[in-house]
Amino acid sequence: MTDARTAIYRVALFVASVLFLLGLRALTKPESARRGLSYAACGMLIGVVGTLFHHEIIEYQWIIGGVVLGVVIGVPMGLLIPMTKMPERVALSLAFGSLAVTTVGIAEFLHQGAAMTHFAVGAVSFEVLMGAMTFTGSLMAFGKLNGAITGRPVTFPGNNLVSLAMFATAAVALGILVTQPGDLRLFLGIIAAGLVLGVLVVLPIGGADMPVVICLFNAYAGLAAAASGFVLDNHVLIICGALDGGSGVILAIIMSKAMNRSFANVLFGAFGNEVTATADAAKGSVREGSAEDAGELLKLAGSVTFVPGYGMAVGQAQHAVRDLANALAANGTRVKYAIHPVAGRMPGHMNVLLAEANVPYDQLYELEAINDDFAQTDVVVVVGANDVVNPAARTQPKSPIYGMPVLNADYAKAVIVLKRGMAPGFAGIDNELFGLPQTMMVFGDAKATLGKIVAVVKDSGHG
Image 1 (cartoon, rainbow, N blue to C red):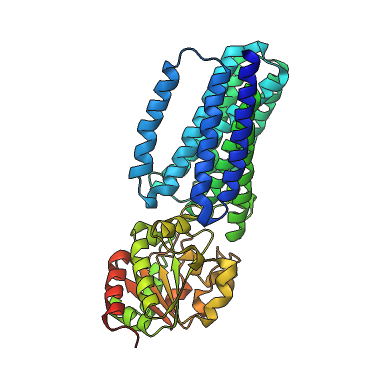
Image 2: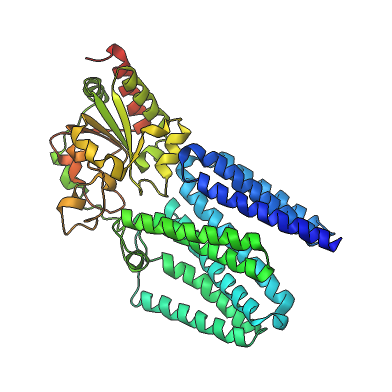
């Protein structure tokens, strides 16, 4: 019977692993992303059931209790949290996941103690170090994203040295623990170091870099899960953790490149300062228009490109954007959407919002694919975006965003910017685009403004 259980267990792990790989591949394309999530969810279910079956667990009350608690917390989070809060939800999920991994590591160490092999001690120590750091770091990222903690970089003299010294100390303690399995004080010290490191790592990072931070912590959580797999001899955890860690690192690299940032600069820099003192300087030079003015201009356009940003998420205006795009298309206007990699507060934020509004995937273009098209575009409609369309990234060597790839919205024949006011973006600097002669600023709630523009466009059609 034991051999049969083992065989079934191995088959379950193989099937789960294949589903994870298929799911990750499907997630690379918007049209197959939902299917990819289903593959991954089925794989996890098969892996969990197979593991429970293999270990011949008799008393399931704790497992059932955990499932019920997870459902009670998870279902409302999935159904009730708005898309504008998705970055915070992702950070919170990372915190929960890393806490679970850390708890498993602690339980395994307390259960086996000195009986653990040197390799197992090293793996579980690495697991709790990365898990504890990801737990507090993700909570810090959550706080910075929802405003509970200031988005400004918080630094103190020698903060980088303190962080490096603490990490080095934890690494030395881990090495000693490998040679002396069972030393509870060293083990607890490693956990404490991880918890403190999570706070110290995120505090000096500005709000503009939170998307990259989330990617990095996603990678850390994956590494911790993989280490947990080695400790528990569970191949699903190893494979799933490796996929999670590898994809997190790759995504962080892509995000850093999109922001013209290096990993070292993200982790030890002070980007994202919320400087607002110069915002008033641009007010006198902008050309303000009404929703009716914007609608009349759009009725004359043969091509329109929408540039969504975090303001669209805040205003829940994605459906209104789609309605305007549909009205323009009905008049024969060519419509596109330009998506910047770091628009919003997490990777793919704008893609998710527009997909929710049933915007066709083939109308969404990444920065590299659409930037050369702006010069031939009649009107660009910027909906709540700021730094990602700031020409200062190309023209001002002293600007904090200089060198950052931006969308060439300023090359278009006309630009309509929908914003609540003249507040700067996360980079804390004025946007040169707002003062250009071809730019019309339309202030107000994006959703309401778009509704008025749609009414104008539909009123009498083209011309």
